[in-house]
Image (cartoon, rainbow, N blue to C red):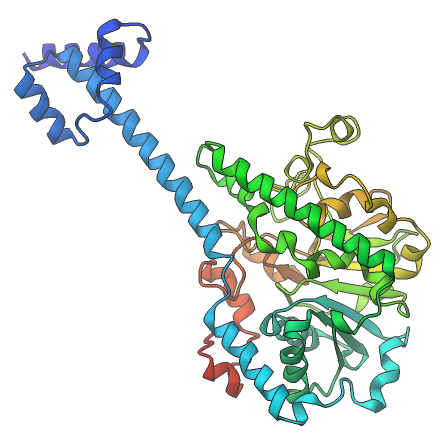
Length: 444
């Protein structure tokens, strides 16, 4: 009896799985949207309505499909919420910025000159190691500078050029004035202190306006699209990050204008940690190219999930599809060597005056186009990225060997949503003995 029942049930379930046009089955499946949601409910429903085993099979199939769709939707919504959580600024960082803004207002030491007069000549000395950071996050900048100095074999040769916006300038200046660094030179400048050429002002304004338009378009499109949940789809939400339309993020394409007296610089994002000495980078031969960058990633050569050209460019446009390979890997932005002298002799920046709608929001896509023939690949161990995602492919040995680890992705190391295994790399450089850091509840 049990054997016969098992055979009939198996046959009915198989029929429910393979049948597409059975009238009874379709009617039952369509009518099950508001039907039983658990196995107990299903058994009660079948008992009360005295339905046969075929109806049981079809209702089981409908219930399972409905539950699978609910799970997929919930996971995708969770992914969206996770990305949205990355957009906020923790109270602790706001507190820190306000604390140092107040110091700048009431404390003469916080307004003292940076760097001290006897070191001003170093700001343009070509024999020194110039590092550029564009950021409005003073805690992040302090970690980058601290980790760079700690790992340097020649910290006295380091010169840090920090560029920030007007609202953060006082806090950033006060931080480094109150916490001076004896072994290196730090310069802090606000964008309001630059005398920009009129054509640059127009170009930057146009760039940001168009990127806002692209951002809004992508946002509306993402709301309408019904993505299947999967880790590979997480990067589709990256375009919604505030950094993709950040002024400071896009100004990296104007480094020659920001630093007209410098010839060679190492550019660092504020979400990186330096683990090994960077000194060799300033002696690196770029083979007549403008920028040195890493092409490969954590998972090996030609493995670049979420950063292929199809993830950055609009391949429905014939201009893009006819000139670019959608499966090509993009190089890594965030730890780069720039030959500013050679850059000034090219038309890299000028080439960005048109075609903004051809790519997704963000600083990398236009750079991929602009530096298309001006890129020199450097050893992958210089820069390992992707630590700012929910599922970082973080091989312990690769991370330990990396000169720079980069929390590219939404989960910045100063947020709680990141992976604890990789956040510890950043936390160890937070100055927890600092009075203001303790007062603001920053625990590392």
